[in-house]
Amino acid sequence: GGVLKENDLFIFIISIDLGSYETKIVQGSRSKEEIQINKSFSFNTPPSSYENGNIKNELVLLNSLKEELRKNKVPPGTCYLNIKSSAIITREIPFPVLEDKEIEGLLKYQLPEYLPMDYGKYVIQHKPIGRITNQETEKLNVLVVAIPKDMVDMHYNLVKELGLKPAVLDYQSNGIWKLLKFTDNINGSIAPSEKTIAAIDLGYGSTNITIIDKGTIQTSRVIDLGGQSLDNNAASLIAGDELTLKKSEIEDVSTVEEGFSDYNRYVNIVKTSIEGIMDRIDRIFKYYISKEADNEIGRLLLYGGLSNIKGVDKLFSNYFGISAAVLNTASKIRSIDDINKYINCAGALIRDDEV
Image (cartoon, rainbow, N blue to C red; front, side, top):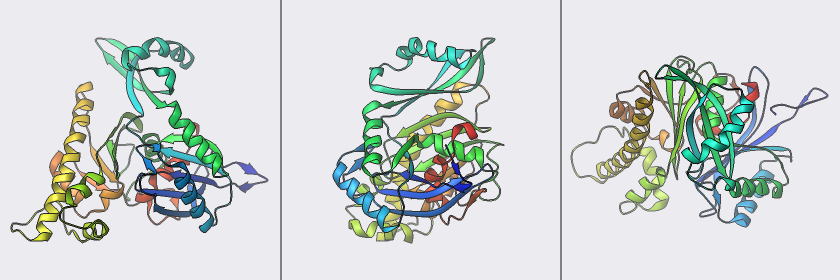
């Protein structure tokens, strides 16, 4: 994985972050010390071609991707793809303290208890994420990720059809976890290794929550509510093509003035919509905190489309009583202007075994 050295030439990896609203692509490489991005661009995903991790119209999506890769002069090469979908199931399962090989064997027996589904239809991966002590016995906490097989196949075929070499299909929580482990600081002052961080990807079709404790992923969930719900709520007030502009005009979404101006009404709709998302996030936080006596969340890190709304960090801080910051910079990631936007692409470039 990572940078393959051929005669000491760095080989660039193409990393694609497919979204229902926007698709982001970087071309980059990584060494032990840093991630070097030498190209990054994004474009609107063709409407209704990609939703919640499912390719709905392969031809339209393919043509659009081909065109953008050509326009941005990206030569064919190895491709890492990262996806998020509420159809990807993640669970934290306690196991006896065993070797990895033994876990695999036991997993088959344990799964039906935790995942009541036809898991012949899923690609299942696991990763030990720490130890838990309950009633005096020590258990191994194992994160299990189940991705529908047809979802894996459909993305694999898409990359092949693009003329690229599919090497890695990553899910986004894994990417942000790897990135927070790789970087020394976020925004110049946040050290990911010190506190429990809830990284929240405020996407268009959905919101991704990844709770990382001292560099280890603890919980990851996708909720099917995002920027789209906000746009739908505001649709009666504002025409679709003006929505983006209107969002950028908000001065501080955490405070709504009295009075019935259109601006105030709009800010109120946006604030209420984000509160709806925060209500759902709160359930995941409560679940995490209730799992173990000393579980707490020390900091919120916001990224993704809605994190660009001014004052959203204050809104989150006020709501949860936890200090919140919008991701602006990350150390060890070179030559990229907008890391907030391309964070999932960058995270995918880091391979697990190198973390």
